[in-house]
Length: 199
Image 1 (cartoon, rainbow, N blue to C red):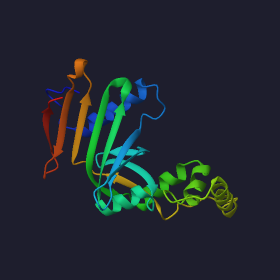
Image 2 (image 1 turned 30 degrees about the vertical axis):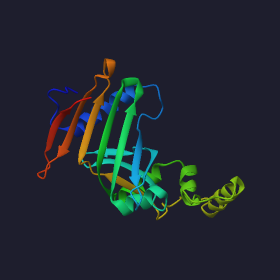
Image 3 (image 1 turned 60 degrees about the vertical axis):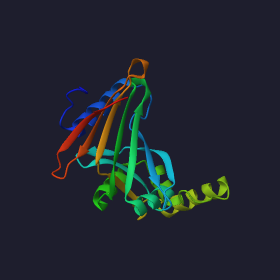
């Protein structure tokens, strides 16, 4: 990334940083990202999720639509993502509206998951109160028995969300906290404007 003459394509720049993080970082989940949402009263909530897709339309992750984040995403219609790689002193922030991925895309990704994860997607009432560990284990056994000897279908509440980037910010750490920052904003015609920011 040349912060004084940034690429006109922030998507390609993101992909280059993702690949560099995968190659150079020692942490296992370089595709982890912090997802921030807000509830109906404007109170923020943040958690880590895994990027499972990324193209010109934006990053994709999967979750239970009935979970807290799913409810908040559906209510607000927007989200903020943060990728952070401490070893590279880099971060990318992506903000924008969300959309649900197609059933075909969600089905294909669900089918690629380990069977245990597929079972867990049916068993978990994500974000809701659970009496104890045995209740959880019992639910897992029940679902496993239900689908014994057959493929596990995707639960209707297990979906993918895509964040459509309206802004993308790149941050590169610098000595004495004199960092480099550039932010892209999408224009109405789909092209991108760029601005260099003070640290």
